[in-house]
Amino acid sequence: MKNQKTRRPGEVVFNAVLFAFSLFIFWQAYGISGFSSLSSAGTFPLAMSGIMIVTAASVLFRSMRLSVPQGGFAAFRREVLPPVVLIFSLFILAYSMAMKSLGFLAASFVFLLASIWFLERGRFSRALLLSIVSIVGVYIVFRLIFQVVLPEGIIPERAIAAAIGDFLKGGAKP
Image (spheres, rainbow, N blue to C red):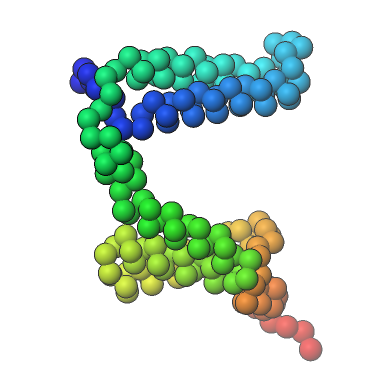
């Protein structure tokens, strides 16, 4: 890394949040079993979160010593919150809101299709193929193999899973 003389927009705030998160993780790790012995369940999480605190503090203090960047909020918005990040954040918000009513399969398919289409800049056939392959793969791994119950919504997943299970067992018995 080159010898940086000015900090990047938002760098101090990000590093402060990272430091606060490290403190929170340390507190959570201490809650596991305190520090009763070196072989207790909380020892490793305490050690790792302690390392996080030291490194986050070091990075925070180093960034605070650098000079303030030029450009103010415009530079922050350009470098930290470009339009693609804002649009994708809206996609994620819409996905989380649609999950309950549409269910996992439909909401995830629409989210993936819209996201890939947006990121691929209009290559709809590729977005459609990747979305279908991804949803089928996730469904097989999580719903059929690990038997994770996913929000059902408008697609009758239980009926689909039962039909696939019957098919794999050699067909339904009369």
